[in-house]
Length: 452
Image 1 (cartoon, helix red, strand yellow):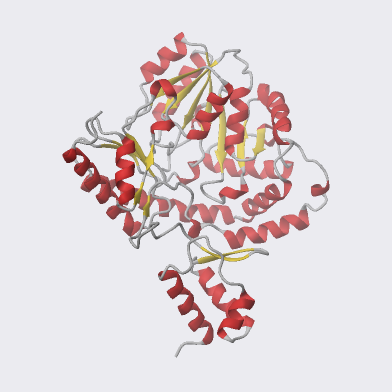
Image 2 (spheres, rainbow, N blue to C red; image 1 turned 90 degrees about the vertical axis):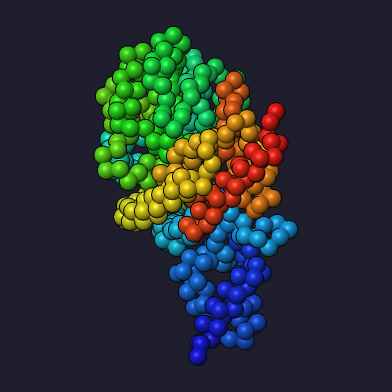
């Protein structure tokens, strides 16, 4: 016989299954549920707590309880939606409750600091903690060189607009790359040159030619689990790129936003091969913690700290003290390390499933890249098939994928790539989703509607 709170749990789960409560939707308040079930408030609280432990719902202080997950029903139909287009972290694995405790402690600990403006580069205590934390990634930097930013994208956006010590003008960029960095370049009218990134990496001879013949002030690259290709550079490639940068007086922005998820024991960031101060290291906590916190880190060369500080102050004065304080407490407690260990295994498993699904279900002539982290990978479509046609076709089959066309700078644009992320896709749905993608490619090839 079920207890009262057990009955409540069963009823809520049934409502979720029937689609009466949608992912992200707020559940009825504790008081409202108490009246509906004619039971004590404690029974409802206990039921909600149990569902939260199972990562089915999560609590937002002063707002209530919400259903975890992404939309599971396709608009206008009953078939289950497989969403490869959303690239945020798996909500069910995010440490809401633990971070809530850290936020509460930060309010207490930093209540005085919230009544005044803070250092543009971040709380010194947090920067000391980050200096220790980065050592686990083989990034050794004193707190004075570390800047806390409002998401790593802020650091990238500020950096591209700054003058560099080499007094050069052009930015070299992997092609493709993520939308926001393209926006930073295009919105400012900056000079750029692209270099193609494939499933085999970049052409190092071509990179040397670009460095030698162009006025390259900085090379922007994502060293691990690149967005959108999912490519991770080898240690040899990283070391060679640093050598070229030194030889031709070029700086490097190493975006290591998902370096925490790398399970390769001897894989180091490019920063570890940089004895010359050429590599500016950035990372984010968005993909491994909570995107809404908007927290990132930049490790700066001594000669650029003053200019960066001025730019940061002009942008937003400083990153919010409360979120900085909570991150400091979370890191110092050891909770972050334990959380990362779980995520590494989760995404490694997703990546393995995805790669095998590609091998099993994609038709001949279709190429793929990445997949190791479970976050990003691309598929190059066969023949003259265009991504936009496949995206529309798959949407009708309840599969969402991302057209990667706009992830290229205009002169380098390719229209035959789609991006996938399995970060929010259930393991058992990955194979089914890739199978539908393979079937979609075959159907479009057979109908020949993809030819220009």
